Length: 302
Image (cartoon, rainbow, N blue to C red):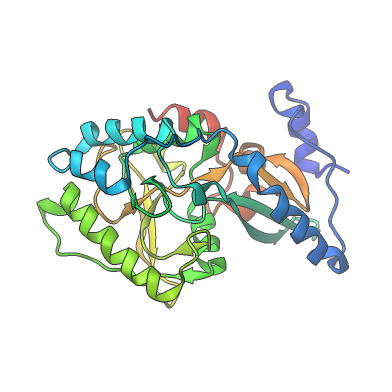
């Protein structure tokens, strides 16, 4: 059966084709369902990520070239690298993260999103650098590779379900925060922290960055970037949802986590954008209710 709110959406031709028959799954099958969804998060959902060529520069080489760059100029160079395929292979191993909730009628729902195991990086598996970007660059990369940016509720769920928790490592505030040298220094710190915890790069990792997020505030605060997160080990975020910075701003503490446009509702494949604008289902993945047409919102940001 369709959920009641989805019946209303199905009447709209733009959304109707994306919706599928959904039914609550018995708890006895939850483990089997989880394994099936985990497999579904694999290669097909990251197929729009371009393949890296053998001649692509390492992460440290890219950063060396950009040491004097900042702002939109640095973003453009990073976007060019990423969209040409210069990103580590392990980022293509999308990880399932499940958010559970109930509908108004009490029906239990499990929504699984598929996310990159770490923040967007340039380079190869041995030499990569996590790259902060302004909103336009982050939105373009996500959109052109078939992804969305997370909501605050998704960020919280990612942190809770991460296998590797990295304690935040704030650096001295000041004008240098947005410099390439600062972001490289911070990335070295994160790499050392992570190496002490786990050597598996594809393990879901969180806590090392603030997230650029999708929120309805982007509509009421045009020209601003929304950031959230940087969770402490106790699970509480340092950064509440904020739109204080202009859209082009990015500093060492920011990161870009990618979320596949395809999600799973009780094991059934559904467009995440449809879920996010559905009156009932949106409450499970968003703390602010429906976010209308997330794909179009994302595309409007660059």
